[in-house]
Image 1 (cartoon, rainbow, N blue to C red):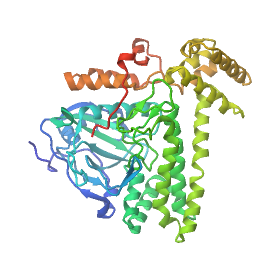
Image 2 (image 1 turned 180 degrees about the horizontal axis):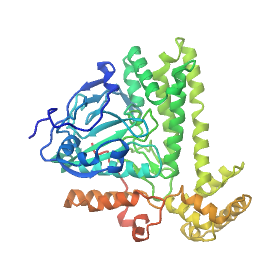
Image 3 (image 1 turned 90 degrees about the vertical axis):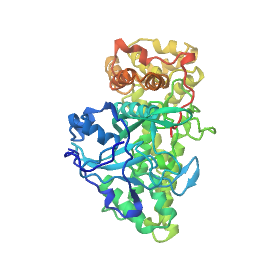
Image 4 (image 1 turned 30 degrees about the vertical axis):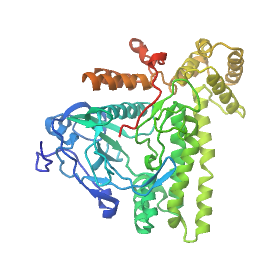
Length: 497
């Protein structure tokens, strides 16, 4: 087996490492565990260029060694980051990167600092008895879904590369191992703040908050109370993010506080899924037996998580406990109206409204109720409604053609008639926000099974290509827009750890 070495040829990865400059109790310095036979599955060349990285070098044998964790690039300072978190409502005071190692940070073409992390790169001090590895299935799932979310315009971590390790990992059975190279604005979570708060480490808490402000929310640095301003900024970012999830039918599946990014990005694609049939109670995660993280619960759960962040920040917000609680509560009270406003604004766009009227929410809720009653496909209902803007009544057949559907369409047409836009303009605008292609569970599962059982990655590459253009008509790939047949339905998704 190869040994990890820093004595390789020059590696064109311009790393900076601000997180590694924080106190030593923020992380553990640890190198990735080498693998026996790394082989590239996929390199995201466009993302590499956006990160100002040499894509050709990354695809070379030396680059693949870095992506597999066999070679530490010049300038990297590998660390596993400490954090805590509430998991399904139960607090765990120490979690941390149990199978991920942060290599360092780069500045992208937009001037934004981005983390580069290897996921599945071996054991760390936070592994808690785990092997620190990842199977190829979860790596492909995260690659597919995170890149689909990026194409949909939703803030997310990104996938830079996926590499086979040439080794197996033991789960329910022996599975091919893989490493995902993940890119994020940072990997700081609500649980990171909880880690220091649980230890009453006020100096660490302040250092973390100041780092987050400098990195993610510099505009609040000179606020009269920068820590309450930080809380408000994170609340706004999370309200907007979760609303955007729900507008495309996405279910995170494991919204623990250690899986909620301070930067307002979607992070940790474990048992995530997109709904087929619309039902607010939809749950796919195999471990969410009580429906805590169901589709319709995501707004309230996000608010619950933000309360935990507020609790962690109380010592910084004010010396007087009552004053700190009052200020935090005032900030938290803004979540629900911001979330609801973001969701309604997005729904107005989805149903083709350019103006605001008082009864718009009732119109949206009436459509969702009809969809639920008819087990209508979430994605296709809104996509077919695009065509109804120009008289095509295909959406009516999707919704079973009931009198309730016809009544709703009549109300919708009466509402849109009060706007100046033409049917063609409305349809064009609606198509910009209503995707035709999403990473449907059965398609993702097909990709995973082809890779695991036959070492065939062609379906993976094809699905990625389709999902890279989610709003476009792709006449030769219409099958990827279709809901699953009864025998194709995937009812559970798994963490894959």
